[in-house]
Amino acid sequence: MRERVIVADEDATWRKNILAWLGTAGYQAVGEAADGATALNLIRMRQVDLAVISAHLPGISGLEIASILHEDKLAPVILSCSQLWEDVLENAKTARVYGLVVKPFDETVLIPVITFALTNYREFTALEQQVWKLRTTLENRKAIEKAKGLLMENFNISESEAFRRIQKLSMDKRLSMREVADAIILSQGLTGGFKKK
Image (cartoon, rainbow, N blue to C red; front, side):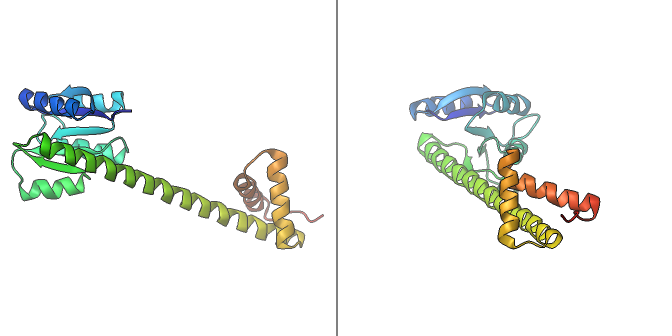
């Protein structure tokens, strides 16, 4: 499937050029905008894979849009600007821009920047997902360990027996082991302990 791209530039000629280059390179242009608010709406509505945006869009600037897209994990941004001032470079880093091109440029400059931006963005999102999974696994393990400890203490049972009970409750109630562990921890907190059988 072809990557979906939005182009936002205050200059109609630049928009036309960029759209033509994207089409030639096999990307699917799904919208264009002359101001920041329109660009942001299009990006949200059209579920784009990439946005090529001018730094100096009227309304919401390209840097502000880049920052919003990064926060909301929507798409990477390639920023275009007329001059590469030091503050633009610093602000682009802060806004998590994935590529920067200085006008005038052509497709031989833009297309490689797009390729690298998309690759880096995919790697970044994959790493974020991996970190989230590892964090969730660790939190689940901690909760199960705590629940096991409570069962061992309150029922004077072995660690393997406590684990077996959590596992059995998980299957019987059709809940995840984490949900069972959380329920055990919560009931301990509410009652101050379990009644021994």
